[in-house]
Structures are given as C-alpha cells and as structure tokens.
Image (tube, rainbow, N blue to C red; front, side, top):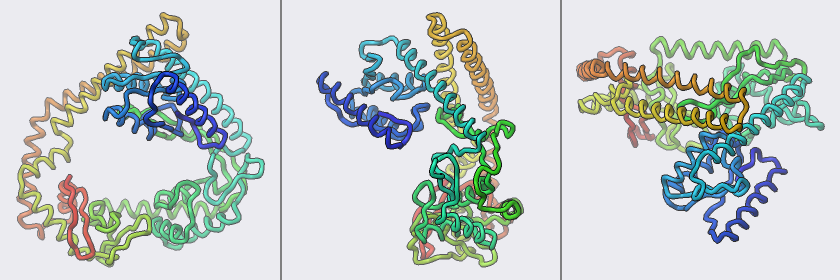
Amino acid sequence: MRVSTRKEEQRSSIENQKRLLNEWALFNGHEIVRHYVDIRTGAYAGSRREMEELRRDVIARRIDGIVTKEISRTSRDILDLLELKRELASCGACFISIKEGYDSRTDEDEFFLLLHGGLAQRERKVTSSRVKLTQMLKARDGKTNVATPAFGYKRTADGGHLEPDPVRAPIYREIVWKFLSGWGQSKIAKWLNQRGIKPNRGRRWYPNAVRIVLTNPVYLGVTIYNATTLVRDAETGLAKRVLRPKEEWVIKEGTHQPLLSRAEWELLQKEMETRRKLHWHEWQSGKRYLGSGVLRCGVCGSKLYGHGERRAYFCSDRDGTCKSARRSWNMDVCDKILMDLVAGAVSDHDRLLSAVVRHMRIGRDDLSQRRQKILELAARNREARQLESLAFEQGAITVEEYQERMSELRKESLSLRLELERLAREANSEGDHLREASAIAKKMADLLRHPDELEHGVKLALVSAVLHAVYIDSLYRVSSVYFT
C-alpha cells in the first residue's frame, strides 16, 4: 500500500487499500503475512524503505507473493516493475494486481504488465506537470509552495504566504548573531539541542542543518521556486535531487517579511565564505591533522576534530549526548598511535598492496563488477527499446511519445557503450597499474622505517591510504580499527 504524503486525508486511502486487500485474501483463501505501507512517491520504488524490506522478505522466502490494489501502488516506473516481477519470479513468488486483473502465475507475457506500468508512468508525468504548473503560478504570485516553512517562519492563516514565527524568529536571529560572533555550526547545533529547540524537520539539529539555515535566501523575504529537480541516477537507479540552471529559477522578492536586512545577509555570507576558504587553505597547505576524518570517539562514535593551537583532538559530539570521561585527547599521543597502526599494517605486504590497489581503484574485482553492471544496464536498455517498439506497433503510444522515448534510450545506449570501451582500456592497462602499486607499497614500507623523519604531507597520505576509522577511548586505548 502506498500514499504520497502524510496528509490527514490520505490516511483513509491506506485503510481502504488494506480493507480491499484483506477481503481479497479472505475470498481467495490466502494468508496475509504482513502489510507493507510506504508514504513516499511511487516514481522510484528503490527510494522506499518498506519496498526494500518487502524485497528482503521475498529473497528470504518469508512470503510466497505480493498483492496490491493497483500496479501504480507498487511503482510508477516501468523498469522498477519489471525488475521487481523478475526478482519475485526468481524466488518462486508471484505478483498480483487486483484492479488490472494481473497475476504473474498465469500472465507470463510481461507486455501487459509493462503496458499497465507505462500508463501509470504516463499518468504520473501528466499529474506532475499539472502540479508543477500550479506551483509555478503560485510562485509567480509570490505564494509559498513549501510544505514545511523555513525555521523562524510559519504559514499565514490562508496558508498561501509566510510570516515570522513569534517564538522561532528571535531564535533564528540569535543563531545568526552567534555565528557572526565566532561560533561554529557544530557548536550552534549543540546549543540548540541542549535547549530542546527542534528544527522544522527532524528531531535534532546537525551542523549541515545550521548551514542550510544560514545560507537560505528566504530570510531576505525572497521566494525561489524551480531551483531543483529529481532525476534518476544511472548507476543506482534511485532518485536524486540536482540543481537546475539559474535561468530556469523563478525568483520573487518581497513575498514576505524578511528576518535579515540586505547588509546583514551580505555580512553573513561573507563570513561563511571566509571560513570556507580558511578551512580549504588549511587543508591544502598541509595543516590538516592526521586524525581528521579517521579518529572517532570510542563512546559515542562521533568524529574527533583537531585544534592546532591547543594540540588536541576534541569529540564533535554530533548529537550532544556523549558521556565520555575525556573531552580532549593529546594530539601528539594520538598521532603516534595512528602512525604505529600504519606501521603495523604496512609490515604485512599483502595487506599493504591490497590497500594501495583499492586506493588507486584498479582492483580486478572492481573492474569486473563495474563491467557487469554496465552490461546489465545495456541489456535492460535493449529490452526497453524492444518494448517501446512493440507498444508503438500495438498503438499503445503516439508517434511523438515513441520518438521521445527512443531518443532517450539511444542516448543511454551510446553512453553505456562508451563506458564499456573505457573499462576495456582500463583493464588492458591494469598490469602496468599493478606494477606501479607494488612499487608504491614498497616505497611506503621503506618510508615507515623512520616515521619521525617523514614530512607531514607524507604522513597524511599514509594514514589516508591505510586507515579508515580508529575508535579511541578516554585512556587512549584503541577499541576498534577499520582499514581501507
């Protein structure tokens, strides 16, 4: 069962779907093992948690098949439907849709499944276009389109505009003041969490959420629409959000009361950029600490960050709940621990060579897996083209739709073919790369015979190549080590 949002009016849809499925199972003598409910868009099945649990239960043979009210409740994407149906068949399970009367046990021809799926996909695009047009008109009129207002704002009584939240707007101003007075994003997030102040989305504040609040132009009284869009990732098949070209954005100023003046906003963004450049300069100039990105607190698991002047690492305590007896670790002691771990790993030549190979991304298994993935995508592309041709011959789609879809599929086919050729060239040169990796491993082993004489940049490279995560407790004892 699936609905697209958590709105109150859609709860009855779930109950209606459940009642229908229960009646169908009772009438046909089946036992309902579990109801899988997703409150997400049906555009891509892979982005839905309950759908993934369903797949795992099928593979584990916990269920004999799945039934849905209609095909679009499962997914509105043809490739997802076909993949799910074949995955079920490979595990001896069936797929049944009540509305369309489809049963994979009797309907072996996948064409009808894809035809129904194609109609559902087309319906999604039409509905999406209609919704997008409505939202575009609202944006041009200066009305808000967001389901959840930015922190510090609330919807007006008519729900069409934003207005300052009398409780949260002052808190937003304090967030800005603290940042401009020197506070970091992590410290601000911890301060908010300790006071029980919740973000508009989620339960806790994190540094990235603070960054979004500090860079959102909505606080200037500006409404921006059509800045991003969802696309399907070619490798994972999942939906991902990407930024549109700026000329496609709809920007409307003066749509609501600002919480910052233009001068304050520019000062805030200048400070954000200054800190970003300072961080990047330290990273590039070799001042990055050996434990950065590697050391973890053995109690809460948060990353440790370095403070050069105090020569210490501190627990970032990302959720403000760390109960470690130690709040800081001596940097020199920690760095020696890291170099000792590297030296120990390097003494095992096979492990070292394997780490270097993975670091250079030239492993045979990786190449083989990538090539197999491309071949699978190419096979799906050929099947999709054949199905489009068949659908056109049967009159299920128009000439314009056929030409548009075939053009996209041909472009995808060309991209996959070029990637296969690139992988072939990479495979042919792999022998040379392996010899190079072996030479690098030998050089690393030679360097570590006198670790105190190494330059900081070399130590950084060694730690990065060998260690992924090192968990350390308050007594400087290493509890867990994960190698790259």
